[in-house]
Image (cartoon, rainbow, N blue to C red):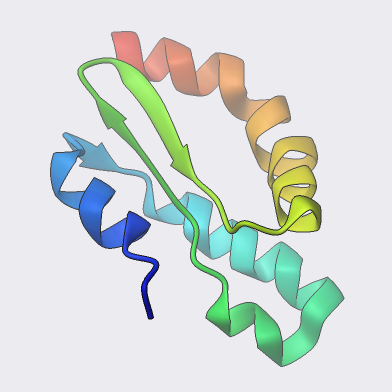
Length: 82
């Protein structure tokens, strides 16, 4: 109840990348089954900078970095700065 990271960051974004949270929960579902629906992840762009908000679990961070952020970061940065 006291974690308001997503609510604090979302209004600051110029653009949200809704697919990031959707894909993160999809990947989490494969590991956590229904508990994945509780996962809160957000990505967006502010002034040409890509911002990620991830759950606090080390496994969740590793999943996001290995499967989503790492492979797509170059393209995301390129798109954010055009």
